[in-house]
Length: 252
Ligand SMILES: C[S@@+](CC[C@H](N)C(=O)[O-])C[C@H]1O[C@@H](n2cnc3c(N)ncnc32)[C@H](O)[C@@H]1O
Image: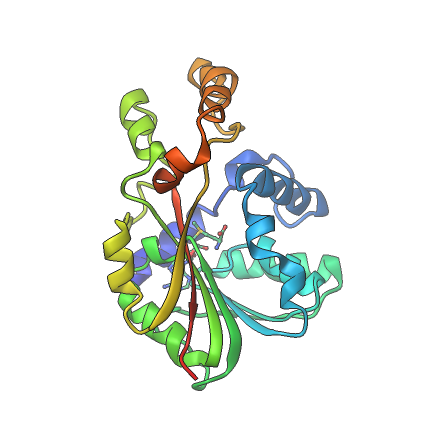
């Protein structure tokens, strides 16, 4: 099954459809980065890359390395793993272009080849929903974290505005065709976080303009839906964010 996951992500690199630049070129990474932080506009504030300066940080499912480069630029010592050879090959190119140090591996995040208590931070964004045994990945995250270390984990919210919208508009979500695709309620996410005694869960990712859908549905979404949605007071819509982001700490 994990081989199906690898095959899918080798053939369907995340966000690749938004760029026509040559994969591996400087323009390719630039466009993927600017698309990402426009779409996930909450991410830069929430992560505060600068605050990880000097930390030893592992990203599981790093893809082509868009966030990992930001952590490295900010002064973290970074390691990235992904099940997809293609993603790791491109991440390697990105770090070379940026002249940044990194340690990258094609590796299954459910069976990490690192010793216990190694990292200050483990970052796993949008990977648990696609892996065969998410509970194995979580126990690996816990194992390789140093006592007092921090895990940053993102999964998709089952009860989100985006679920409702895709049902109403009949526009499928990205990667629903992946061999594994899971969404979580808050209580299911809490169950997954079982090894951690201390964590918080933040609801994020509200509508922002899409570049992915250029048809009339995309235009209505961009011109009316996004604007109208952003008029609603955040406190009312908070529980319906598409991303459930947890900051969890391993006990000392
Ligand atoms: C939706 S992409 C997310 C990429 C990146 N983290 C991001 O936020 O843009 C999912 C990534 O998880 C990787 N992945 C899925 N299962 C994995 C596993 N068991 N071990 C390592 N990487 C995995 C895929 O290859 C893919 O690059």
